[in-house]
Amino acid sequence: MTTSLENLMRKTRKENRAALIAYLPAGFPSQKGSRKALEVLAHAGVDAIEIGFPYSDPVMDGPIIQAAAEISLKSGTGAKDVFDTLNFVHELGLACVVMTYWNPIEKYGPQKFASEIARRGGSGVITPDLTIEESLGWSAATDAAQINRIYVVAPSTTDERLKAVVERCSGFVYAASLMGVTGGRTSVSSQAKDLVERIRSISQLPVAVGLGVSSRIQAREIAGYADGVIVGSAFIKVLLEAQNEEVGLAQLRELAEELVAGVREGR
Image (cartoon, rainbow, N blue to C red; front, side, top):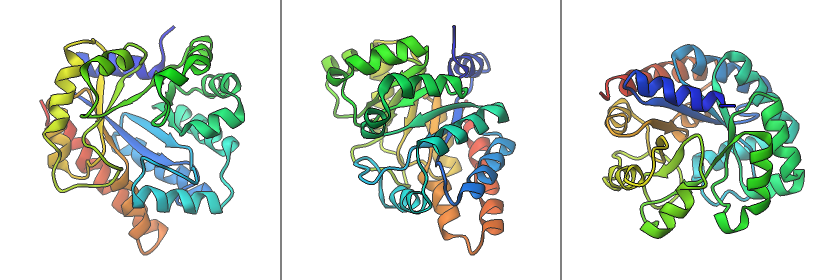
């Protein structure tokens, strides 16, 4: 059995292009607003969605995603809302994964969490703070549920460590473009391309690059060498700073269309 994410990555490879993967936290900018925003992204041509599980102590997230998570948590967003949002994206026809820190999975129960991801049409889970050494139970749960297990690697990852982590990934490998937290940058670090090349030398898995992508030019650059371009903070920033929801959704559509165009221009 293959997941929707795996099918998408095969499709984009055949089309000789990268996939644009958008990140939004569940329940942001509001419960209803979240669904409106996801519909906008789908209609703009985004290929896949990462649903963020809002968390109170996000070690990898910069101030923009932290602000969005705080808004979501204050509205009472919990596991049920995350899974409902995942199912909503699946029904929109997009490949979808959840990005979450380990604590919510442990609290919910790894087997139950993985099973719910599969039941709701999700392809897998990105776990930025989970090490492979602590993944025995999670590996068994994801294997049983037949969902993708996606780890994050960074430019500082040693060759030996990189091989060990990549061997345990499926769906794609999440390559962090730089050291540090999420957030838009004016340029993408040259370390990103080097990291993708290192992964490609040891694995046939697709590689998606995230952290710092905020413009059409950056999306085009990364799409020239990676299989996926992940954008989160740039989308969230538009919604955070908009004077009202209607304006925010219009600006979100505009940015998404620009980034879709950039990704398509990459090759």
